Length: 429
Image 1 (cartoon, rainbow, N blue to C red):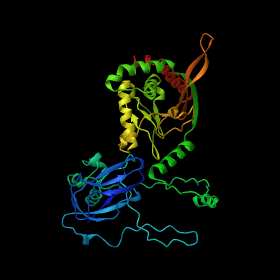
Image 2 (cartoon, rainbow, N blue to C red):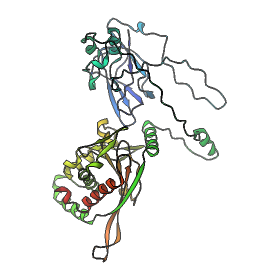
Image 3 (cartoon, rainbow, N blue to C red):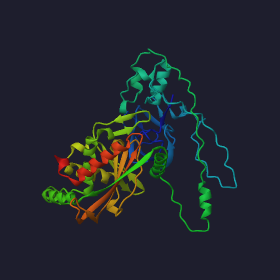
């Protein structure tokens, strides 16, 4: 029986993607591990591998198709002895419906049968298995939760199922009481907004996957995370002098440290100094992290990435600088792998380089906080001796998820960050 190849979930948050380019054509023979297509997620373009062997019988989704939902059939794989005639013509992939005008109703489209839900382990975790492996397991009465996968990222493939004896029947899914769904808040439709400006010239800009994801995640974050904000001014003259001294010594190695490199190091060390703040929100629990994995916002065309520097507290300033430049460069080219921009417990957003004095950032879940960094500006300050002087002052605001970090803990974390930046040599000891 022909097997459907489904649109994969290439990251934990992926719900849809763009099938950018097929790397195979109908009639090609593929083996497990062969590259099938290039798929654009909201963050990057990634290659999709075959998990079973066979012949590409039919391509259902064309190159360049946008908004393809995860688990949508994108092609049909034929097994040995099967031909294109075995592909049922009774359920062709429906063409996208034309956009209806306000004066005409869209024609009724055929409704496809709902796809079978992905198998779940007893603890609720999703089991990743190829469609062929699922069918064979069902025919043999096997429980996929009891089978160890040998495919990419532990996915269960045909060979795993065939090597397993029928020892346990497939458990019937437990009945679940659907959770009540809150009614969405009323909002103005896009057509209504456009109508307000019908007598003014404008150009519609289509939202790409990244912008849609940013809009959805930040709206959710602002509505669901109980933010509070802590603000401090930091005198950075000692840091600037120390940076200048280090850069002269590192010039022969082609390394030039930025103020942002010191901020990353200061945050990473502070998370070790105040370990109760080095945590993430996990829905029904808090995960207390051991290492300091710091995310840094990088602006790119049409959006932003937050690549993560893992174990930042253990790395030298020159190592952090080199790694940050590499991650930022590949982020702008949208070449980061998911593991390079997912994770971390705390983030940094630096708009000081754009001349912004201060601002408040939105916590990016599941992080517990984010440090918004403004520009260093010459200001009059009163010294410890009571004398008036001039200092370079950098304003920072720390946005905190109150579910994870309480006020006193947040204050201690920000104090540690300030101390590290005002006394930069001590955080290198």
